[in-house]
Amino acid sequence: MVYGICYCPVSRLEELQALKVADSKTLSEAEREQLFELLDGAKEFVGWALHVLSPDFISTSMQQRAKYNLNALSHDTAIGLVQHALDAGVQVTEVFVDTVGPADKYQEKLQQRFPELEVTVRAKADALFPIVSAASICAKVARDRAVKSWKFVEDLDDTSLDYGSGYPNDPKTKAWLMQTLDPIFGYPQFVRISWSTAQTLLDSHAVPVHWDYDDGDAAPTPGTPSLLSYFARPAPTPHQPHRYFHERCLKPLSGL
Image (cartoon, helix red, strand yellow):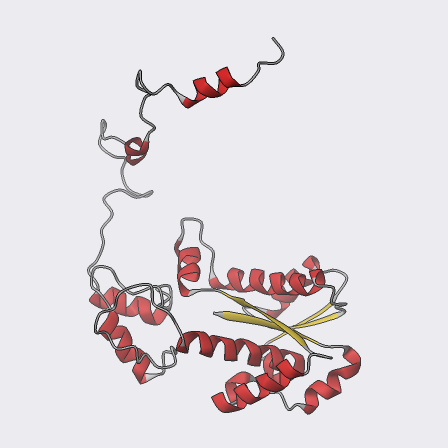
């Protein structure tokens, strides 16, 4: 997932609007690329930045023991982008944000984090405010380029790399997800396994995993060694004095 921020002087918003930016979802790929080049070329009054979250990072965050849901992840990323602009010396006065979750609660959260700024959070803000439209174009172009040029860390052998756009309504993407699914190991890191489309396929086609012991289950059998015990530090041998002994002997003692 790619999050974007775009900024320009309030006095030059009309110039930004004159570029005919629009909600990136309503534009063709060629139109987005053309508008991105215009935005990138207007450096005298337009700036932009991106934060790219890999599929593997998002899945790991969402499925760890302390759950980090996608809404919270999105909010924190947006906060980080605003802070990045401030740290870069941009004189931010107004912030317009496309909502994730309830707009009023999100706006309150951002306003508390940046009390000196005027914050506006709206649903479909990328269609309402040109500055948000510009940010959505930058993010969408970057996302599409990353998907097209993805470098797999796994050896996929003869698996086709014609995976389409990566969206659930793309037939190529659906076919590739089925072809790539390994019943034991699941998907390569390219696929966000917390994505509902991928999760549904895993639930129906992958081998189920049963954990013998979990937080809600009964305690393990008495005498069963803890998993952590297999990683305990071995005792020092006569030929290998303990590191602590060396450190204490080689350093002067104080306070004695």
